[in-house]
Image (tube, rainbow, N blue to C red; front, side, top):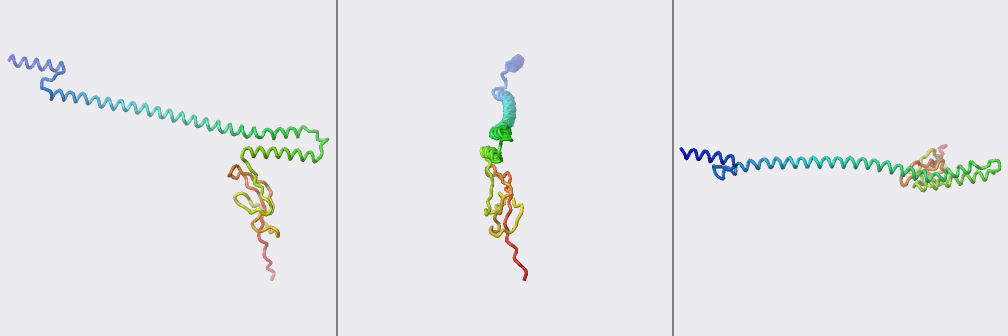
Length: 194
């Protein structure tokens, strides 16, 4: 009986001290149970890390969107500022012309002033990358650059060629802003009075 009491006491003492009375096999089992908690804790840590990274990525993306929107607004503002700055000399020339004493001006002086303002305006457009489309008589009709507003036979202009331009067209780089309005020559109708 004393042996049973000693064995029971040893088992109780082993359990309270965390030492297994059944041998190493049991201790390994308890050790495995302790390691089960570690993978869960590790997964929870990974999950928390992934959530933190996702939040940082979302915040970075939102900041990127705000910066991109602000950059777009600033680029537009700078573009408008550049265009306005190039047109200010044209306004200055208009102001000079309007401040002239009309009673002492000749028609030639007035025409010269208008031509000067127009030339300044054309320079301002050129500085912004705008070029004029000015087809001449006899030029090939190009539907990408020209808009035919009328057609008729012209004896000295081949069919499909420009007879005259009614309105200048304009391009911004390679993009047509407005086609030139032209009259195009067609073949003369054949005389069928036989």
